[in-house]
Image (tube, rainbow, N blue to C red; front, side):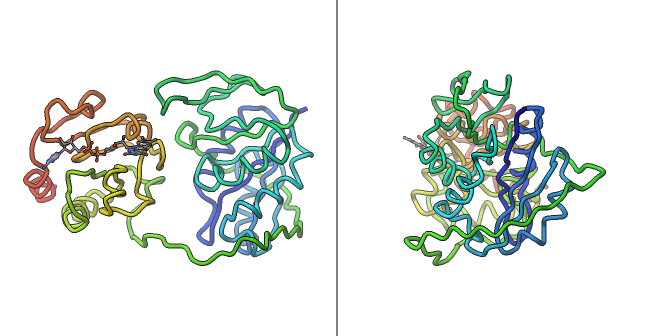
Length: 311
Ligand SMILES: Cc1cc2nc3c(=O)[nH]c(=O)nc-3n(C[C@H](O)[C@H](O)[C@H](O)COP(=O)(O)OP(=O)(O)OC[C@H]3O[C@@H](n4cnc5c(N)ncnc54)[C@H](O)[C@@H]3O)c2cc1C
């Protein structure tokens, strides 16, 4: 009988949607699912965790050394529990991508990364070549370590009953790592991962000033999250956590608007499963138009103010 451990991604604001998506993937394995929540704020969300559909037990560790998702600490915590399970699943977010490979190395197993579908309890589909192809991967390891692409699974809902909550006190604090500070963008608008609408800007904005001046009012009108191409991030127009793509975030909103973005394959890897894609570009031959449902050919400096005003 399979037994799965899902490692929850959470912070002081709550359990992240990526956790519910990972649980939805775990449910497809028809197994017992236990959910690990860790951090000093974890007890605040234990009851909520216990009500997520499919969870048969919550394991709660309230040690503050897990507050900032430090991979070295999480790797040891998960390693200490992993031998009780046939599968360990975590979201393929920065959090999961950071600690899971460490657990895989310590257990000497091959991680199956960023799965988008489950065929059976050892066979999975995952993107390769920046999402240009999908590989069928069979794992023969006794403990299967898997990260889950959140956009491929709808988040698990709540169940009628609450699962039991087990408290553990395991403190694995790596003395070589110190948390200094987290720099996050405070915004009233939805986050990139949760937004129904994402507007992304590219190199064409030419400066941070233009990027903010043109995109902020449009995002405000559409209640959208702002994303960026890597070129825009590298040039300092937008912060790192705005980056969409192969080496950034993977998003699949209902509406994705790419403005002044050429459509490099590495950018498409992060947004090509969006439901409706709109592209604004002055070059009618830009490759972004090949995947766009709607295209607007023209100068963004003229089109964005016009669009913002009309909305
Ligand atoms: C290993 C690797 C990983 C990478 N990971 C990522 C990733 O995660 N995300 C990512 O985005 N990229 C990534 N890249 C970079 C990627 O290859 C491209 O270089 C990048 O996406 C280009 O960004 P861009 O479209 O903003 O810029 P450009 O390719 O320079 O395109 C700018 C576009 O703006 C248009 N334009 C210019 N002026 C205007 C105007 N006034 N009005 C309207 N349109 C205008 C141009 O026609 C052009 O199409 C990666 C590359 C590598 C090698």
